[in-house]
Length: 353
Image (cartoon, rainbow, N blue to C red; front, side):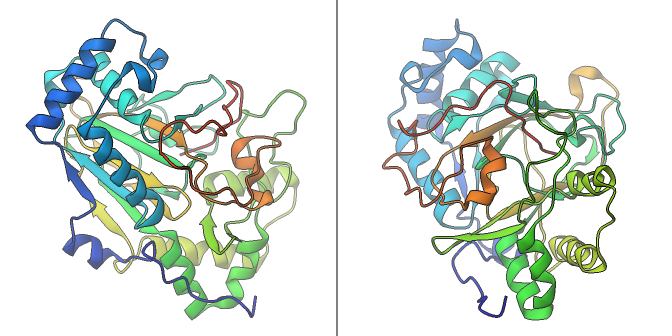
């Protein structure tokens, strides 16, 4: 680990930078809304997940989405699309617009073993724990990444109180650990087994096939994968407790992610579309109190997108299923549906918060 150096690209941001610069927020003007409405009119009769890019033609908005995709991939690793008047649409039509926009940003992949391609983030009255998914609760969520290149959230309705989105640069977390405790980077680069929470393929074990690194370099790019809620139960199933160094490393990671210096908090507004690059950012959420009326409860739609832009080391293969490691994959010429992008199996294990 003596040859590690700080990463100085734009993904290494800190909270103050995000608060003082809103260039990562893209606002839909009326012309853009009119174009989206025209595209919606062409697909309003279609099943949401049957919509493809050619069914949802965009011109001016498509040019903006190329800039958004570049921002998410090559700059700070996040963007927000703001200004969609989501309350004027039915939930299905809002979903069609969101899905149509997603077709210009990547390929939707399954979010669980039930092959859900468009997820609903809302409180379903369950308790957050090792065996449940946090997005179905109102609980505070720990910092983590999702099992895709880019995670997108569309806010339909906000909560009564709380529910702030919290984001930190995993690149900056790496830099701070390198500066303060470089010795603790070793267990993070070595990686951890993951509990697949019952979403493993038939014939495979309940754990990942191999330890998945938290940090990994490939072709000069640093990528991150971190989900402590799946790491700790894997230790239990292996019957081997984590070492002191492993625990210290994860504790320091969590502490840095939530620190005032690195953690950026934002309140999402109805119509906001938040996009995060899972390889360079970790996210969480504060707990929230919901409205009592069902029609007013907090509700977000989630997309997991595969872009195949970033080179990933072979040990990251588990992120996308067996045999789909991507070493040295160059960025595609366009951020649509590149021919080389492999389809996600409907039964591919997909783990998130």
